[in-house]
Image (spheres, rainbow, N blue to C red):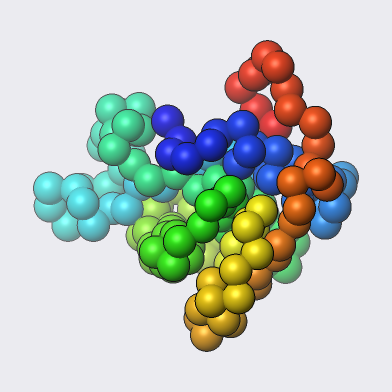
Length: 152
């Protein structure tokens, strides 16, 4: 379950893919992240667990894109707050401890915050952490889907 306005978040993610990576197929929408540090012992690994048992408790990245030269982590917000920016840093940290993404750890991460509500304070906050800030007006987003099919 996504917080906020899931249809808006989905439309923002669609817009981003269409604008910046129109032919890219290596992405996950609402990608679950399992930080191995939460497992009972350090000798445990995610292979010992049924990941689906954790899915409701795991954080979800709005859009995770794997490109040839880097990984993009995108957070989409309709009405952003400063605390929403920190989610990107949390996701990056958690991904570094998710064994399912071990093969991508050698690639650099690019953190991107996309919003419909242009706020200078959030833009400045993003810049101070090296996070790309993108403002997109709602009228530029794809039209809403009246029936959600489970993906982008």
